Amino acid sequence: MEINKFFKRFFKYELTTAIVCILIPFILIIGQGEALESISAYAYSSVDFIFCVLLTLGATLITTIGIKKNQTITWILGLNLMLIPLTPHLAVPVIHLIVSIIFFGGMTIHIIKYSDRYRQFRWFLVGIIAASFGLYYFTDVISLFAVESIALCLFGVNFLADIIADRKEFR
Image: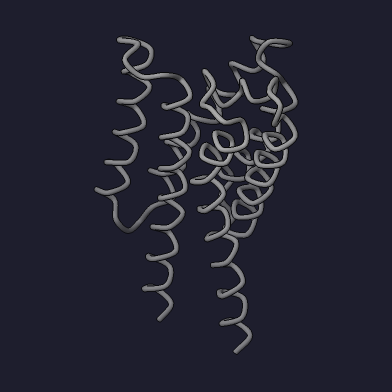
């Protein structure tokens, strides 16, 4: 019985993390009333506090999952996400860029490395993330905000896939 309680509680962490990752861009748009040039631009907006709270919440949840599942890359990603609001892109652009690259690059590594089930689907998620960044950097067809939003939403979808895979495994 105790093991079932543990898994139910843990699934709530993963579900909450998935929801937070998926909703961050939408909450920022609704709070500000418009999409800015990037998620980091919200640090200088009228909803800067919401930006900090959402990223800190997401970072805490991701770190917790990484620690509970013994996934080094995941908890490092969580700690790294905490640095994004602490290194505003206009104040410390180089450090912010490095932290962002580590986060979004690490996100794709996490999706591939920690997935035993639904592998093709996860590679598909990574492909969409990579294609989105490629479209932004090489064609300027898509905004950085859209690319970051796509990546965060798909990272959340990855956590949902983990929940589905884990539930099937522990039945």
